Amino acid sequence: MDYFLPILYALFLWWFATGVIFYLDQLPVRTFRWSMAGATFLLLCALLNIWLGAADTSTIAVYASFTAGVAAWGWQELSLYTGFITGPRKTSCAPGCKGWSHFGHAIAVNLWHEIAIVVGAVLIALLCWQSANQWGLWAYLLLWGMHLSARLNVFLGVRNVSAEFVPKHMEVLKSFLTHKPMNLLFPISVTAATTGAVLLLMLAVTSSDPATQTGYSLLAALACLAVLEHWFLMLPLPVDKLWRWSLPHRSGAAKSRNVEPPHLNYTALSKRLAP
Image (tube, rainbow, N blue to C red; front, side):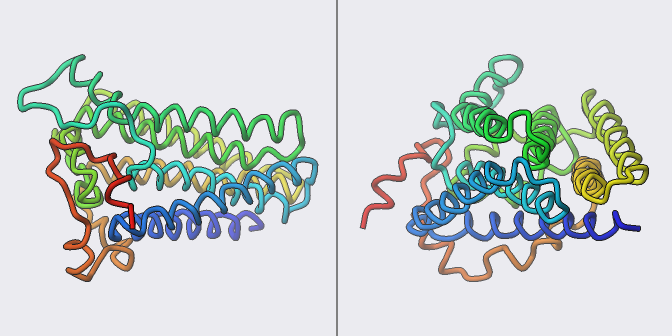
């Protein structure tokens, strides 16, 4: 049962970190520079942790590296949803836009964000290259895979697009959310995620080394969350209740965002962030 505590830790870390991101990107735009400054400091600490702990194979080092990988991924998510790193396209798609043209527009909206994710993965890999402790890298890559699969499914069409989690200043993203009973990618995504989760759980259960068992247990928990997140896209579940504490309850916060209509430039934060 030594794998039980790591699984609980991974679940809590995912839930809490997701809630913090939801909370920060729903705040007034003037707060975004401070949110990103704090997140960038945490990112630097995470990268330093991965580098200094690359040769440490203790259980504590596994937890630390895994947490650092999740923190690095959190920086990527916050940078997107605050509008700091998005893409060259700033406008919503016109009604009726579909096919490869629509897919190209979706890529353009998030292009710099996706490139930043690749840069982050390469940097983390270099910091722990050929080292014994690479759990932070695997956590980051697994979260990237979850992210990519979920976004493709939402683009192709699912029952629950979770538009309520898209902050007002990123309304442009809603033009790429598609309501459908099912898409052809979804069964493949769920099958792959389930297979990966089972394999990681088996590795955790059969590992004799406590640190290795901890690492696989942490990754298995993330893989199980990938399966759960995909089913959230299809099943009529009140997902918002998981993070109700992180969503804004003050009308003043929404009124002070200085929100522009979705067809305007949502990344022109410099003027809105100026004192």
